[in-house]
Structures are given as C-alpha cells and as structure tokens.
Length: 551
Image (cartoon, rainbow, N blue to C red):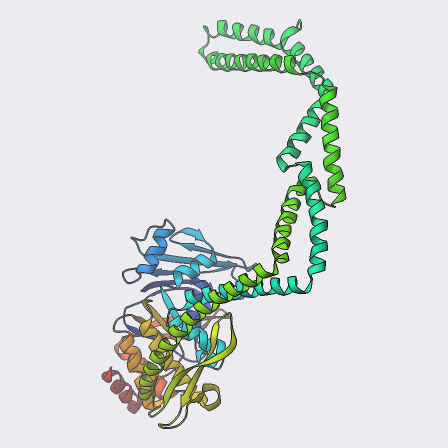
C-alpha cells in the first residue's frame, strides 16, 4: 500500500509530506483548494506525462516521492527482483521535472525509464479519474475496459499481431498478382547489381584496413627517415640522450649518499632510463622492418579505386556498400517469393487461419467475461438508485474482423425491468452515467490485484441517499485494501476511516495548498461545512455527528 507521499514545488504545493493509513480515506475541501493536485502529484510519480507547467512558480524543478509497502504487492516485488533491485525495504518511487520539461525517474535509488516506472506502478495503484463516465460513451473505451477487466490484453496483442501478418501477406499477394511484369523487371535489375557487388567481395572491415595500409605505404619513406633520425638523437650520436641520461643518473646516485632527499629523484631517473631503453629497442625493431613496397602500394590503390568506383556507381559511401548488398539480396528473396503466386496464396490462407483461431478464442473469452461483468454491474446498480435497471455488454460482430477481433463491445442499459437494453450513449442521463461508471469501477476494482485504489471525484452527479450508499461501497472496498477518495459529498466523507482537509492559503502573495488531518471535532466541523455551506449551525453540526455515527 501507499505509505508516504512527499511533494516539493509541485503546482501550488511548496513542501508537503503525507503519511497514509490503511482502509478508506477521503480528501475534502473547497472547490479549487488543490485536492486533485495531490492525485496529480501521485500520478506524476507513477509515470504520467510531465512538463514544466507542473513546477510551482518561482521554482527550478518539481519533485515527488512515493513510498510503498510491498506485503500485498507480489508483482511489484517480482519486478524489483527481475531488475536486480532490493525489495526488502519496500519500494520508493522518485520523479523530477525541470524547467526545460526534462524528467528523471528513480526506483529505490536506481535511475529508470518512464516506461519502467509505469510497469512497476501498474502493480501498485489504480486511479479512477473524475471524468471516467465520459469515456463510457466511446466504444473503444468500452472494449478496453472489458478486456482489461478480463485480463485479455495479452491475447488481444496476439490477435493484433496475427491480423497484421495476415494483412501484410494479403498485400504481397495482391501486388504480385497485379504487377507481375514490373516485379520481374525489378528483379532482373537488382540481380545484376547484386552480382556486381557480390563479385567485389568488399567488407567494412576491409575498407578500414585498406586505408590504414595505404596511409602507411604512401608515407613509408618519411617513416623510415623519421625512425633513423630518432635513433640517432636518442642512442647513436655523440650527444645521444641515452648516454647523457645515464651519466646524470650515476651522478645523482653518488650525491644521494650525502643527502637522502635526492634518493627519490634518483629512482625517477633510473625509471626514465629504463623507459628510454625500451623505447630505443622498440624503435630499432620498427626501423629494421620498415621498407618501401611500391608493388603493394599499387595493389592497394587499385583495390581502393575499384571500391570507390562501385560507390560512385550506386551513389553511396564505400562503407555503405555491404549494407546495400544485404538490402538488395533481401529484396531479391522477397521478389522471388512474390513470383510464386501459389505459395503466396497458401501463406495468406495460413495467416488468416492463425488470425481466426486466435480471434475466436478472444470472442469466447469476451462472451464469458461480458456476461459476468453485466451481472455484477447490474447488482451494484440496484444499490445506486437504479433499481430495475439492467446493464448488458453486447458483442457487435464486425464483418471480416479487425486488429481487435471479430466484434466491437457495446455497453447497453435497460432503464426499467422488461425494457429492451439500448446503447448507453442513447439512453443514459448524466447522473445515470456517473452512477453506472461508479458501479463499473467498484466491480472492476474488486477484481483488481492492486492494493491501492484512488477515486478522484467519481461521485459527481450523485447525492442524498445514493451518496451514502456510495460511501458504504467504498468503505467495503477499504476493508481489504487501501482506498482514497477525493469527494465533495459529506455522506461519502463521513463513511471514511480517516479524513484529510485540503485548503488554500496566500503567503507573501503566493497561493499554496495545505493538507490537515482531521480528528474528532475538526472532522465534525468539516462535515458540517460540506452539509451547510458558509454558515454552520448547531443543527448542521448535529447532522454531521449523526452521519459520522453511522460509519
């Protein structure tokens, strides 16, 4: 579960450290106080997109750190082990964004990519946004929700891959059938070009060797003269360095007997003497081997000219010739296959068979998951003042299928018992959509494996007795996992095991958000404010105490 959240210079928050508890907790406060900012800060730490607009005015960077306990997160523990990270002390996510919009992420102190951050975050927290009900109007979102709930995403990925393979094979067959003459001409041209390059027998490694050898042979005379001159200066002349250095070293050795301070200098001189002797020896060996070779130089220049000629002919750099040959050979292989229309047709049939087999598996799994989801959501709807209503998940066939399978998912609603279920977008009002969205989220959250659930004002459009039921549902969720809800509803807040108040203050002309943990009397006052507005009366306070007493 989420244990601690530390925020620095994020939007309206300068410095804030929050200690989270288990069970069901709520964030309350006036509109615009910054309740959703805390959810945004956590989402940022979990890998959401980041830019410089998240940095508090006047600051250089924003930083958010989230600390989690892993007792109920085996998937997160496995992820840490797979990435050679210690998991015994829990999990620490840290993310920063600077004024240039660049972000950095760390897991237990080790730098990670944002993608890796999102991978581990998926096993920790599930955030339900305040606009979730709006996405229910889109068919794509409905399909994604059903597939995610039923753990069908891996199978969906296989179906999509099989679809793309089938489409590519079909495109190749169509091209081969329609452009046989053009393909034959292309193949003929590529064949003689590839033969010419293959006959050259050139490699990138050879090019480097050729240039090095040419450079050496072309400057052979200078190399020989330079080696001989260096030997003359170092070892063979009347004032050779080797002899003079030896004399100096011997003299310092003698003087060191009278002053030990010279001993270190003597050691350095003898070391230099040994290094010089080794250099002279190596130089003599080099001079004995160095020689002029005009015949080999001519061969090298002829080979270089051949390579450069091919490079000019095919309009590329010499080092690019092997890769060019590989591309041509690959294309020739494809053209060879394209010439065999019968084999291509067999490949298309096999690819379509693979796709249909996987798509049927996906359809069967979706049909089973749709029935289960519809029943569970319908049951929760009865508690949310949608009595008699029925939720259905329809599988609408798609002719020929697509990358997502043989069907589109369609959420449907029957408002009254006996009525025919119709598409959600056509029959549900705004308030109904909010409640249906909440019912779906409650059902899908119950099946989720993540230990922490966050609901950001998902109770929009709900009030009265329904709000109290929502509070009870969230409290039930909090019995076996950590639940945090941003809410404006006193009936929901009163059901929480713990409550924080978010407020906005102005200091030195700067607006800041503050978070206060509420206990006893303070909590009664906050619930009363949510009930009564600006003026809080004793009757309102009494009502607040009554709500809290029902929890």
